[in-house]
Length: 78
Image (tube, rainbow, N blue to C red; front, top):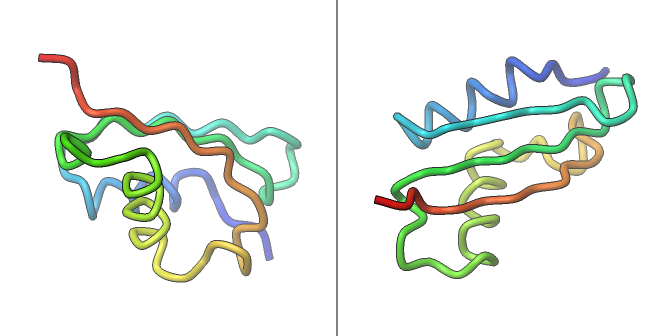
């Protein structure tokens, strides 16, 4: 069963309140998405650490309900 883009956004924002989240369905099938996440919690973290934090926010859905997620992350530029 495909995962809805709004559900991906909800899970990420639940873990990172105030984050900027943009989700794009890459194939129109509900299984392949791109996400861009800007969150203050990423400050001082490596890209690998940032991506791991997002995957954890998805609560085990990566690789199961959510087949593919092209992820870009950043800390806000204040």
